[in-house]
Length: 158
Length: 84
Image (tube, rainbow over all chains, first blue to last red; front, side, top):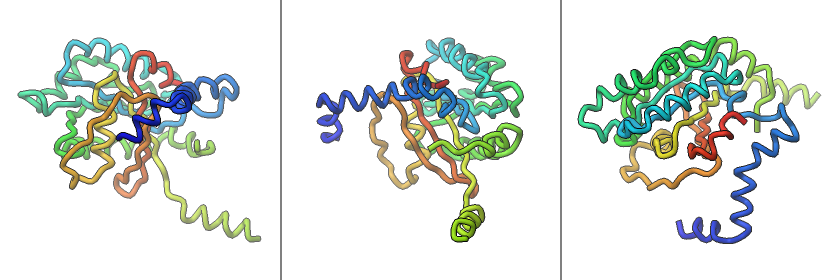
């Protein structure tokens, strides 16, 4: 931890972090087709803070922007109602978040297998069985279909 | 000949990889979720995370399929990078 703080405090560390941050923008400018998180991803996980209702509207807008993006077409979507362990009714967290996120969470990107909303928590590790099953659902859908075939035909990003 | 054989070997032993992108608003718990998924359940204490600037990468095995997770920073100024 101390090493990390020391690295960040040096000018070189700051430059490296700035470069790390802006590399995708720079790369996109020079090599527009080389690498894209949206284009290279098989599936999408969208994490919502289930314990902070004040930001659900902002989250819904961000999710809709992502789902509407053409580079994500055909991708399966998993919405995680996170921090559900901080709520008195953890089981209802997924339902409430699913309602708040609207059709974007249910449909996912167009041309894809749709979306799934699951409640998640960091403790117990991995969020328990429900999140594990949901992740298996996402992986099973992410590895087949037209989007997976298209990604397989392209060289893998490094 | 060697190239052909090594190419065939790579083809036979290559494991399918699925890449998943983790996005969401800042402080939604993306990095904590990534850590919880990739670390073994034995570690009871979760390390405190700091706001992600850039990207965290995690690897995971789901049903014999190798999964790569990209956890992108969710701060409003960083969200334009999601689609890049």
